[in-house]
Image (cartoon, rainbow, N blue to C red):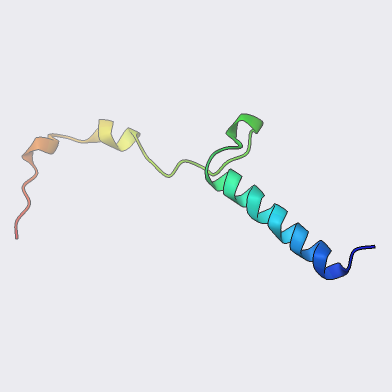
Length: 56
């Protein structure tokens, strides 16, 4: 029988692998994944973005 330390290490390893796959978007085909932080609708709502001038 494995010790509880080995079971804990295996569990943490599996959780790390799951988090890596989830955060990278590798599980989207299963329906899991983080929400997309981009807001593409904001680009469409801009009014005359070429008029923007940056000043020092």
